Length: 389
Image (cartoon, rainbow, N blue to C red; front, side, top):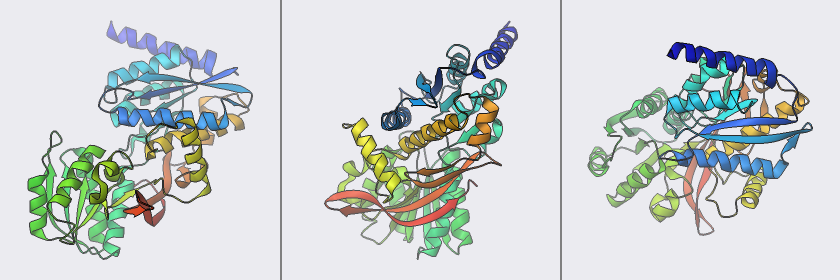
């Protein structure tokens, strides 16, 4: 019975593609599958913010077609819910694009559905390397973890950091972050003098920080899956005097997010060095225009994040695709355009690698500094045109 039901769904998906999506329509619908509630809403909400900012700035029409956004909340980690949302968006809402995907399980669950329906799906966050290979209709506008951490290790070794202690959350992404940082760092001549892995649930960083201090490295490399962990770790780092002992803090960018991390830490965050594909402090025309549009669209919102920018860029790339197709969107033609896209983003120039349908972009080395009385992630270095590894 279950197999029969799935077969019926597959037929329905195919019929929608044949009878609806390939035809010219007055309205082009974009389905968003994201964590809009629950523990991962801090990823899903920026999707909404980026989409709203782009559409307020550029309107809701392109190539004579009205653009309509249809949201579905999958909580972030419920693969079955992600799958049902995709099926409903395709069969009932007749969407021409599926976007969002806060976490990797969601993207992987939807990949075969997008393939069968020939619907472009654009990953705006999930960072696991290689997932775009799961469907010829999947591409990514966010980043991979390895895209950040291995080049960051290389940069650290080249910038007077000789010895590092690594401290990461004990799960697959944390272990990958550690391995890739170590690869770049040791290849550049650096030495790993110790490592620890922290439980993912309810971590207590104090004993690990003492262990780091005792080893007297030049720097600590830290990774955990959320800004709250960055706040807890940096508080322990400062309270135990690692900064005063001359030990640098190295981490992935959301460990020092503009808000709420920097606000919670205050001056204890000064000097922290992180790597990320975006900073609100980037000085380029596209970022200035984006920040102005964001402030106009969402005057009471927290500062935008790299996730907000990924959603904003995704909308721009979809608008450009619809424009080039003169409003008549099919999955194959849309993917031809998207897979070769080059875009002037608030984060700098980006492009999609047609071989992998993954993103090539700059990575920024950011240091927390106080500028005009305000803490910011000031870019102090740029790693240009980093390909997904």
